[in-house]
Image (cartoon, rainbow, N blue to C red; front, side, top):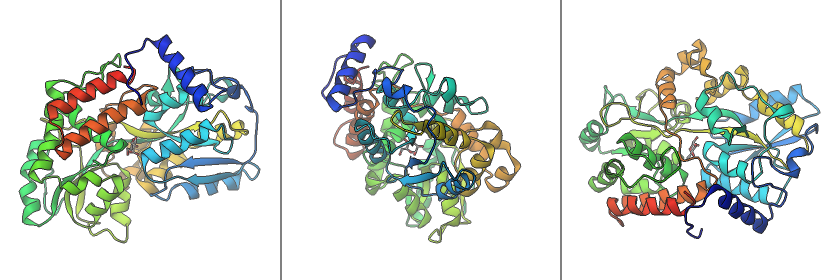
Length: 426
Ligand code: GLC
């Protein structure tokens, strides 16, 4: 994307409208209304397609089977994408740009809501399309809201957790420096010490933001202005860079997304892993897991106490191009009912969106780390909320990656990151 100077909201809307015309997203108002398409097919009922990232946890087909058994005339078909966040995003963008009606309900990562809503691709969930989200965690609802309008129904939250080998480290580290000190234990056992997600994609933005936020920095301020060129942010990013330099994070982790790290941990090749809750169930039940009974879960380690997780999670949005929006609405609403939410937690160890489920006795007895997860999510820091998110995340990824690889100093990386975020429209 061409660097742009900071734009006032009106000018930004004009640029967006131009971009939309250029890419054929013609029916959009470029604002919160969603244009013509948003006023059509609201009473439509019939078969729909639900689009989601690869179902590593095996929760979707059984859920959809339950829905289909009860709704024989409004059957849902599952369309699985890959398990990589950026590819999921690009697949949705292509379908929306072509105004295709075959993606009725789509899974939207918390960081895409603003972009997709501003482009007029998501059905505003108001009036007859409204969904009652009163029982949900406020942060999940906020992440699905743009300019005061709900555009999606939160279906799973996500907070970073520290997976650790409790057979080798009986008391998990509380701080980052303490964890780095424990890397001698990994060395003595001929295994890697720590990894997160450092491949150049959305997961790197998550991990870089966590390092920066944990040490008191911020990427953007409350007004959306880039403020990442700070001493605190340098300290945070510097901690990751130092860990790569010392080998506490292996060079190989520069290729890691969520799944590569999970597999390394399950293979017994890592002492500590930063990952999302879905890993818990798989590390416990996967035939290939060698750590079924030897791992524990703790809060992410921080500066002097728990670290700051990036807020993750996904919502279900109704495409403005869907022909069967009444069915799409009902299906999205059904996904947040306790039965479905409990199933996601018990079967896939996914983080519920309903706050009460964090103390549900069935869930807590199977997933003892639920209080830790709730704390992680409640204290999680959202990534920047902006229609220009693709350019913002690219600014973070490119520069963090260059620093981790040793191609740029940390000072240069945060300074370039700030300039690139500003150029993205902030
Ligand atoms: C998880 C999170 C999501 C994040 C992604 C990065 O799926 O829920 O918010 O963007 O990981 O890979």
